Each structure stands twice: as structure tokens, then as C-alpha cells.
Image 1: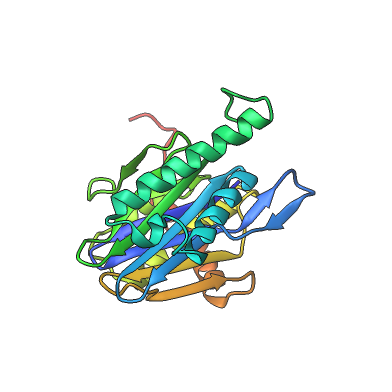
Image 2: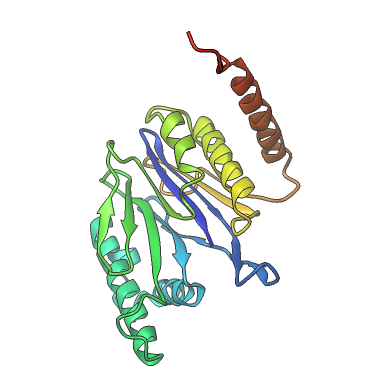
Length: 247
């Protein structure tokens, strides 16, 4: 399983993903699910992936190859005029990859090789944008009504973000919010796990403002986890007690 979150703020974009993949409790591996490309001063693009690992790796590998040979092929990541164009191309690539693999394995019409992608980035002269791309190749864009997207194991961490999100919050507070969301997910589901990849993209910077891999021994994440647990217990005990006595 996977857990990835992309968030839009007034100041830019914040992305976080886990790195665990598994085929049962005795077959757990670490694979990167966040990837980025940039043209200094002109564009910054990042994706996070969830779903069938072979499918998502095939899509990312094709995107990587396009950036390695920009003069030999139509490289939408680098040459796309808008983030909408980039989302359209990645959606087409994802849909075609899924169809090819399903047809080759005799599974046409089934969702065995399903995958989804969060796309984030900014091109010079335009606003930062965030998209959710579905296995069918279609996509939706984040707005201030829906300012964040999740893929993978979403249910445990979503209430945290809904209650804590504020569009004008600082990057530091946004990272703290995501840390709590991921900690809640890790506690509830063993298929999501450390390390975590973090990427902050400041508006009009066209380069990472901050990036980090949060390892198992990361002192800040450990402090967040412990303090959040204590705060929840304290909040619970401060609530009024239920009474069995009728009025």
C-alpha cells in the first residue's frame, strides 16, 4: 500500500510520500514514490505514485527517458506550455501503460494494474498547480475548496488534514500537519511505512525550497509521534464524562 499527500498553500506546494511496498507481511521493500524534474528559473515539476509498482515505475521510467533526450523526442515535461498540458500527457501515458500491460497479460477490462498519480508544479508566469491523475488518464485539479489530494491509504490521515489545514499557514506548520497525518496512518496500517520523502516547492522559486527523507530514527518525527499521542490522551480525558444516570 501507499500514502501520498499533495497540498496547495498560498506560499506554494508541500508534498509527502511513504516508501513502503509489500506483497504480504513477509515481503516488504522500500521504493521511492516521489520524483521531480526542474529547469532552473523556468519550471519545477514533481509526481507521486500509488498502485501497481511495475506500472508506476514504467510510467516514471518513460518520463525520465524523455528528460534525458530532449532533442530527440517531444518532451512534454520540459516543453509543455502549461501544467494542464503536462497533466494531459502524463494521464495519456498512464492510461496507455495500464492498457498495454493488461492486454499483454490477457486481463483486458480488469483493474489489476491500476495506478494513480499526484502531479504538482509550476511553470514561469503561472500559478503553482496540483492535479490528481486517475488510471483512466483523466484528472482533476486542486482548488481552494479542495486544496489537497491523497492517494493510497487515505482514510486514517485525512481527518487530521481537514481539521488542521489553513491556506495561509507556514510551510513549517504544513510539514508538521503532514507529519501528524502520516504518523496516524502508520499507527493504523502496517502497509504504510518509513522512510518518508518530503518536498516543499515555494511559489516562483522553480527549485526545491526544502527536501528531506525522514528516516526511522528521525528525532523530529519521533517527537511529533510521542507528543501527538500524549495530546490526544489529554484531550480525551478533558472531555465531559458520559453518565449512566438518567436525568
